[in-house]
Each structure stands twice: as C-alpha cells, then as structure tokens.
Length: 454
Image 1 (cartoon, rainbow, N blue to C red):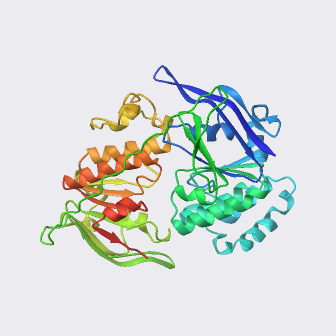
Image 2: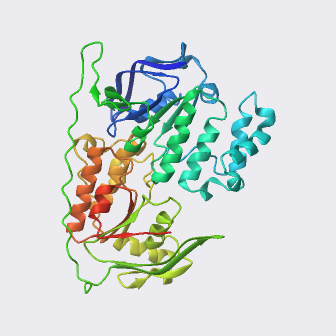
Image 3: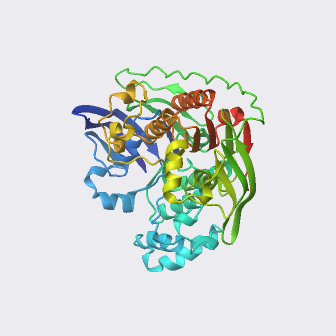
C-alpha cells in the first residue's frame, strides 16, 4: 500500500491575482512510513493537507492511494474509508462525551458497527482512559483531547492518517505520548505528520521540507538533510535563518511600581485543584514566562485568562495599575483591557472571513513584503503560522503596556519565530510587560522570571 502525489498544482485567486500554492509537487509514501512534512509558513503544507483529505481538489496533478485516483472517490467516502485526519485542536464533536465520540467513530466501521459500544469500552480500558469516558472535549487537557482524537480517527481502519500539527499545544511529555501512538500505527496505516515541531523527527522514519509549493529537501532518520533535484534538474537554494540576538536583561528595581500583580490566586475545577497560592508582580520592561515544558494541565491558559479579567480565580486578586479587576463589572473590564492589556489566546481570535486590512484597522503594522500586499485577502486564506504572526505583530503595534500571550509562536516556522522574538524584545526595550506561556528555549532563557504552576 502506498500514496503517490504526482505533479500536483493548486492555484487560487487572491485579490484578482492567481496564487500558486503548490507547483508540481511530487511525493511517494509507503506503508510502514511515518513521514514528517515541514516547511515555512505559507509554503503549501496546509493546502496539501486539504487536498489529501478531499476538502479541496487539485488544479492539476493526481493523488493515488495504491492505484486509485482519490478524485474519483466521493469525498465523504474518502474520509470515512481511506484517509483520516486530525488537526491541532483534535477532531472531536464538542457536544458528545469521550465515550460517545468513540462509539460514533466505531459505528462508521462497517465490520465493527454492531459492537461499537462494546469496543469503545475495551479501547478506553486498554488505553487507561476509562476515567475520561463521560467528559466532554472542552473538559479534557490538550494531550487528552489529542489522544482520544487519534483513537477516533483510526476507528475506521484508514489507509492513510494525516495529522496536522497534533502536538502544537502539548508539553514534552504529552507530545511524546502522541508521537509514540502515531508511530505504533505505522504497521497498518501510512502516517503523514505535518508539523513545525522539531521533536517529530525523533519518531519520523523520513522527513521532507516543502518550500514554495515543492519538495526542497528530504532525509531519513539519522541522515543529514539533502536537497531534492527533480526530473527537470530543478532544485532550491536553502533558506538562511539568522540567529536571534540574546536579550540583555535590565535590572529593574523592586522600588519600581508593578503594573500587574497576582495575589494568592487559586483555581479549582471540581474536584481537582489546578493551582493555588500564586503570587507575582510584573514591572515595565519585564518578561515573565509560564513554563510550557511542564505538564499541560497546570492552568497556564487559565491563569492568563484570569490576569486579563475574562474570568475570575476562586481565591485571590489581580491588580492592574493598582486597581483590582475583581471589583469591576464586564464593561469596566473591557475598558481596562482596551486601555492597558492585550491578550492573545492560544488558538488566535481573528475572524475567518474578514480581510487582513479590516482586521488590522487603523493599526500600523509592517508585516513584510510577503503579507503586506495581501491586505484584501480574507484571514481564512492565510496559513496558521501566518495568522499567528499577524495577530502577534498587531497587538505589539497597539503598544498597550501589558501583553498576555498564550503560546504565540508555536505555529511559526524558524525564520518567523526569530522575527517574532525580536519584535517581543523590542517591545520589552520600550518598557512593555510581557507575561506569556511558552516552551521556546530562547524566550525561557531571556525571561526575567519563570513562573511554575501545579
């Protein structure tokens, strides 16, 4: 069994211009392989995922599973019998419990449908997940959600599994569990893993890099990267990524008045205590990091929401410029955020159908040549990494004194990550306070303080 991609093109219209997302891409993946696909933001990875899963059709070229052209297969049948997929948020139906999601997945397997309830119980027990059976997806940690999503995705015994950034939100321990599960599936399923996560290479049997719509480099486990030369003698020059200068930390006197304070914060999701007795203060020019290399369910995202005033802690107080957020009504909190606090959640909050220009509004943001000319494009046309970069640069440009960021660079390629880090360092130099959840080693090293939860 194999999947073959031959001379694949995908062209779409953007602002009355023809944009070539894929340009003659060739790829062959055999059963037993766990293939990792990497590449810069906007290189065509997301487009390839949509074509492999039948959500879009190629402008030219073919995709074959064994000898069957997938364009000749009904898209629903394709995703039910041939190609399964999950993305960074999982693939669960939020209105159904874990048990119901898995039972539904197994009911779509014709040979197992009559025993779907029984098999679901067996699967939950085999994977030590029985305690999650009655929970809904939004009650799961990111790692738990991805694990259950994978089990649901393979319930129909697909020939190909496409995993799009499945470990983006996960700490090291969670990522290791997901990668190990993916690799264990390779004996009977072709696994294609689309990711920026360098950790994936420890589990992949082969890695390819896409750049400008074609395969530019490839290498097998334990090998060095090698450039790809196609049948026409065409190859790409490797992209050079500059290192980020180290941040020179400024000594900030304890006599400088904090602009944000957390006093005795405690949060409980009954019956579990998430964190307690959290105390810290942030001053202008400081970078405070919530270490995301720690286990996922330690409340990092919840703490950022509490600091922004979107939710309240069970116990304790948050002061912004000396004012307690807890005593403010909804409208007053919104006004406080508008004046002092920019908050960027992990999955971004930009709308799909508004254009880039509409999203930026009057905010002056230099996005670079590759994005500046696309201001009339809907945000839904941008890749996840491009969206993450747009959102981060926008709130930095708004120049509020406090930035609360939840894994702001996790979807970016190496070059854009370094550019984003430099922009954050510039914001700090101008006296801004950054409190962020991150697993990026450069940012953790540059932090003035690391806040440990759990």
